[in-house]
Image (cartoon, rainbow, N blue to C red):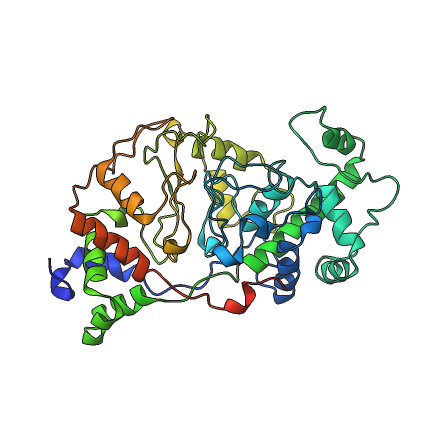
Length: 402
């Protein structure tokens, strides 16, 4: 199997050309402070703050640990309890149109809010978050410089905890119901702004270019030095990636993700809860959350994100679908798939090579079929992902607690 320009068809060269260069982070018009440096400073503090959790023990970094490429290395994340999914990396999440494995948020700021109130993650409440920001002199000053004066959330009319909940008898829900509509709106506004600040920080967690970019750019420029960017085995892996392996159908573009959702027919595992219907439930959730692009807390209810949500339809084909992850730095984020189904990249390639499992919901994506790769070819794909897709953060200094 050849490499170099003679080893790729014109169609494959077009596919490769679309993988580089790494573009600027797309704008988020729903977040007015998305690219405000001061918001990123505040967001970084909030990301690493345990004060946002219910018992002061957990932060965003508990499941998105910088030392583990902003994942936690677990099949299912553990904080206040155990979640039903594997924590994806935050790195390059700014390029995703939809957040979470099921796309139940349409912005990073919406996504940042979910784990805070999840009983099995940070187990906090939106009122608790507002109180935490108000009572911390540094956080309060930085917040007010961005968003305006805060209400005194230590006033006696505010309990320590309150949030909406599906169960109306939940103590947090009962406390929330006792607040006036004006106070609820005030708390929600602060909660949304906290999410927006965290998103501003997370937008800095992006990669620059790596060996794949050097290889493709040199190849297209007919500069023979491009061959130095990848080993022969990784070159073979790349040719398989855009050829026999069919990987590019879902893992396309600079982030090596089409940003869409697919049912790859992952079967049950002993550690996974039953009933995870993926994108089907995610569509309903993103349409219902008050923190979506069309909601009262969005800074642009008519822009691109709002239009996507307006035309988002609930379709039976969404059953069992999960988001296609980007592959840059993928070698650092094991285990893989939404439930930590597969331990390593070799297992991922074997899974797609055999396609022997049955999904709990829905049906296998029609683009997928057994690949019939040889052992040598499967190994080359793994080497490609390990070697070619590594890339440093644009600003490594932001990947630590302040």
